[in-house]
Image (cartoon, rainbow, N blue to C red; front, side, top):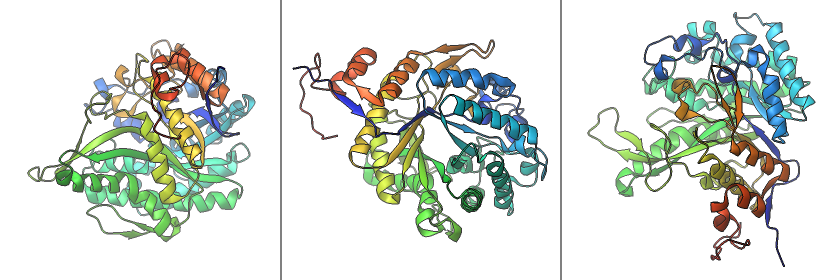
Length: 457
């Protein structure tokens, strides 16, 4: 008897892709477009420019591409700089364009998740101190409330802020991103204000739209001490607290605590979360070198696993299960995988990465961890922040030719279509698209070597 093995998600599971306004819209006027003008900040001093021309109307054809992949949801962001280009003055035309996008998603049978802040700010906001200013949270809430009032009839699934600890560390601790500051005190101040902004926006959105579901997107860095573990454990714990625990723990305690910083009480944050977005990409090894004054804690690529370009770490998609398990056990909230992807211009790693990520989510569901959806990063190649249009950092299921704006379907897009249509993976899908994974994912399938299965899910 031939058994057709299958790993399927729960009914109503959301399958989609994720994009961000500055990275795909083009013609942006914000603090990032100004940052791009500086020498040495972006790969080959590139500028985002036209990006993927969504603001010129190409979003519709890309939504069609998502529809061909049988996506039933999409995560997009709206740009604060477009909606409130001048302090206190909202642009109804920009809100109208975002209505067009949301309507286009609904017409294609896709549920929108809208992110209110994905790294970029209006120039006027940056000029008055940005996220270091005391009134930054209240300014953000005013904007968030206006967006929900204008678009709430088309969206009830809101992501307030994308990767706040990445924004705080890249822009204010390491200085790689705008505004280029390198001070722990500044990073702690910004992170606390982002927490206040999320909490205030959460309560404001609930007041406007009581049936809404509000969360935020958390970047989870896989971090372990480099051998010998006893020497580097402190560094791993500090990095874990900085990137993975501090922001989330405040939803339990109402207290925000970064390493080497004083705790900050943000009482409004306690319980201000309906769901938690997980963004998992890479693994790093933490190191401790007391001889490097001011830079004693560092990270390295792990050995024995595929690694990404430049400073990108190890690519271990099966660890997504461990991340989900840890976050659910610690915080007890429903989870969306709001980003998951791999830099892979030749599309050699991506099919395997995609299949193993889906299998990790299926395992999590088998343990009753409430994962609600999966948003792959990204629908198409786009502007990748400091990496610009470096071809090594191509994340798209569709390749983008930035000179002609032509899109080319990668094989992983075909695989994702099969996954979405099946609501999971099957032995037949893996045998066709990632046959080398068959012994690992379906060891009893015809043609797969017989191995001992050590786990239940």
